[in-house]
Length: 260
Image 1 (cartoon, rainbow, N blue to C red):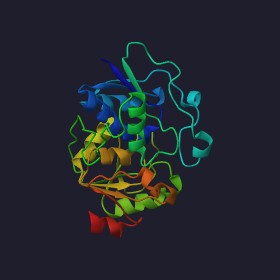
Image 2: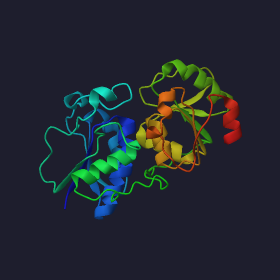
Image 3: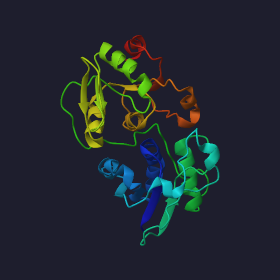
Image 4: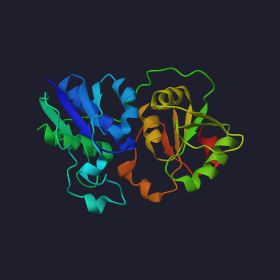
């Protein structure tokens, strides 16, 4: 039997949805395929390295084709719209569209699981997400000193302050390959998703805001994940990942030193 899961969300949505994808694979006892937007094909090698994934499809699928992605700013425009691909490839026996169909309830990953159950005609609660188990494994090893690593995405206004904090605690900033990094005396490295996962897996502490790298750090079950999120809307339990090492702290170096 061939099973396809789809997720048209952004990077963080895709990495979060892997909890539900793993649950589908474990329920049926076989790896499944995952279809994501071609805009995020850079994630494909890392996702395909997970044992519950057979292959990742990155066919032409513009998010604009299926309406706005669900975020707190646009959720009221989006409620009730199912973001499924326009045409599902042939050859699949079962298909589950994981994209949120309303405000994610009670959390993003549980919403994906409930949507999978609906599409696969399974009883509620059949698909287990279990974030207390790591759901991402780094296929590569990273050499070097990565005791404290950090990343900051999206909120550029706060980035200079974050750079200061990371420099103060002796951390290394792990940025995207095309990311512009302007910070004096800050150790940094630019990495694709495979190398980023390897670096995170080698580190003891991750620091940053709630973004796709934050989801990756949680998926890897890093020992300490210190979450600095200035945008209080992101404090909603909907977006939180209850992994063993994840905790919210204030935006200052002292709290990193206390919690590391």
